[in-house]
Length: 70
Image: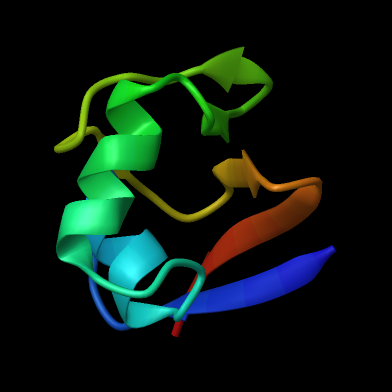
């Protein structure tokens, strides 16, 4: 599982996908979320601006990312 360090929380879901390089850009991040390709804590998440906090686990493209506060 990949670790993602958050400088502050909460952070919007699409921003994590974008800034961590999980997807190429913000538009693609919003598209994959809206399409139901992203899970947060084991459940499909379609809210682009879902607030993500330390301890949350994001899953996309068969990869998991666990959030941790810096």
